[in-house]
Length: 304
Image 1 (spheres, rainbow, N blue to C red):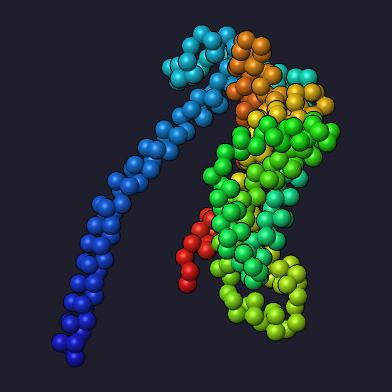
Image 2 (image 1 turned 90 degrees about the vertical axis):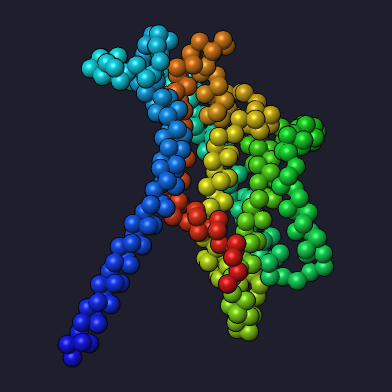
């Protein structure tokens, strides 16, 4: 009995020592990686911190010295909210914010809706040329969208659609569909085939299967693409400038920020405050959907 107890105690001691060695060995191997990641994060955040500090400094201080000088004189009274008040009170800024919402929300919902139906068809419906058609969709990912701007502009001008919100909705939908279909098809294709077969045996139509099974299970990838598309459309300047123009009644927030800069860039300090004002809504969208982000992007990458 004593021998058994001693052997058990020795085994537990050896296991504890092995665990401790494993812990320290893992720590030694992991800390360089963590240190590199920390350095990258700090370097990545330095410009953002600089813009944030500059947004609270008056124009005279911004033009006189760099933002990092505030750390040598933290007790100074040069902090101000005048940049934010100037941006918010600028003519047409509020209307531009609403115009951006009017562009971004439909331009996010439309490609997600179309791509979800297309991805379900590519993944679970058998029709001639399915694989070749999907290859064509994937090939569209490598075509620069700038190549289509002038042909689209000529078409919109012919049908009197240029300068309207539907023109931008259709453009963003077309440019966003290839990536959306690719992401959603990989995710939907990884769903269990037994579930689809059970739904078919129970008499569910393809539309019922899609709306009642596939869509609820595809929320992670739908949310992931919604983040991509929302951020892309919200921050877009080129497409809005080409298809909407700079008229005050249709001007989006990126064009409003560009106009804040002045004709010769003399009011660039206002851009620091404007950047953080326009950043607020995308940040809320990302934080509200970020729990789905990684799961939606990595699902379908490994079949199991």
